[in-house]
Length: 221
Image (cartoon, rainbow, N blue to C red; front, side, top):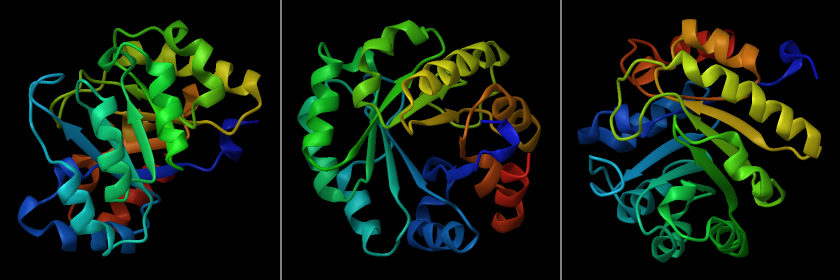
């Protein structure tokens, strides 16, 4: 399918929002045309930062109709999947390095009625998830090292995005291909050209004076 015909989803990352007014921030990006809300969960162990847990998801869930796309940067991951599913996650993605049996983790997420995703760090090769594509609903390429917002995009990840696009197309399955890290209207052009269909954007949306204009600029890249 030509890249120009692919619908581009925009998922603002809550990590860049004003934490003093999260409910209002979520409502604002929903009204501005966001497709998903991306929630980065960090434990200070798997990545060098701490963000929030299932209580925050649960408190926001009743105030938004957006799909909650939860990115678990925690280790071990399996013991917390149920809590985030119960809190209102629609999609749960994790890093294969965060547990000894990622295939089993995918099965667990799907058994709870949630869509499952795999996250690839900058040094994680596409081949590492090749035998799990039958259980994946999302592949997320980290175009920065995970743990902090506001980092610079890593162009080295563009060939990985293209390789994953080819792998997805070969399956014939509707697997979302997302990219997170340093996404701006400029970097979005290269990311979309490489084959991505979902853009995770933090400061590019929440630091903009007008959320709707920022989201439209990314989608039209």
